[in-house]
Amino acid sequence: MKKCSCQNDFEITEEDRKFYQKINVPEPTLCPDCRQQRRMAFRNERSLYRRSCDLCDRSIIATFDADSPLTVYCPECWWSDKWEPKDYAQEFDFSRSFFEQFQELLGKVPKSGVLQVNNENCEYNSLLAFSKNTYMSPGSYLMENCYYSRKSQKCKDCVNSNVLNKCELVANSTNCDGCYSSSNLINCRNCSFSTYLRDCSSLQNCFLCSGLKNQQYCFKNKQYSKEDYEKILAEYKNKDQNEIDREFQEFNKSIPKKAQIQLNCENSTGDYLYNCKNAIECSDCFDTEDSKYLVECAGVKDSMDLTIHDKEIELCYEMSTGGEKNYNSKFSYCVVASPNSDYLYSCFYLSDSFGCDGFHARAKNCILNKQYSKEEYEQLKEKS
Image (tube, rainbow, N blue to C red; front, side, top):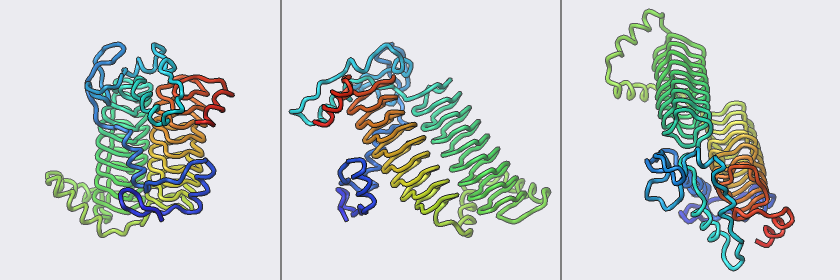
């Protein structure tokens, strides 16, 4: 057992040690919870500010306020060829620590005010992609006409919700898939025209139910005729919302719950897991195999300590935000398609590199944003 700086004990198993040796990193000194907090400290989902772009000078929404010492560009300028990250390159100084030099680089390279890709009328968002007319919905993609939703995808006309997939006209809900015209749902699949459900699937026209499947016109898990069900709805129409909330919570307590919410999983521990194998102490993960300490990840294999990182990920460690085709990447934030790289910040399509920031076009063999030949890079990385 080891003791974290938070004074909690944590275990490093033999399997953990094998993984650390395989990717050539030292054993962690912080417990899993503190490591998770450290990764999330880099991710600002909801604090947005009005300021000016430091390149085109137009007014923008950004995750950095106007008093920030950082150079901040609007997304259009940041993704453009109007600036070059290699212009901020630093020579590696062996008389100083790498982290001191990396911190200097992070302070110089321009940052994108918000991280967005291919959106329309979605100014008030960060970490959003391929969406339209969407507001304050971080970590989402393929959204349309959605508001105050988080970590959701392929949804339309949804509001005040968290972790939705392929939903439409859904409000005040969390962890739902394929639901329609419903509200106040928790962990529901393929439910429609319903309100106040928990752990339900394939329900239609149901109210205040928990743990039901393949039913319609149910109230508190009891079947009614259509006419009687509508009378019950009419009785509740003018009830105080807080009173209904309390009633649902009390009823829900009476229904047995699964210890862990998992579907199609093998040898896995954690909540809200789908199609996982050997996923240990993970939560909100999909299509994950041989991994540990993951939160809100998908398409991950043989990795540890990842937060909100997904799509074709393998042999990665201590990564937060982003993903897609990352292999053997470590200690990085918001990195996409950047294999065999460590200590990157907001880098896209940068392979075989170390300690870089702001690359938004294909490059490789860079250290502190300076370009090297393959031979020079390998020699310098080995020495550093």
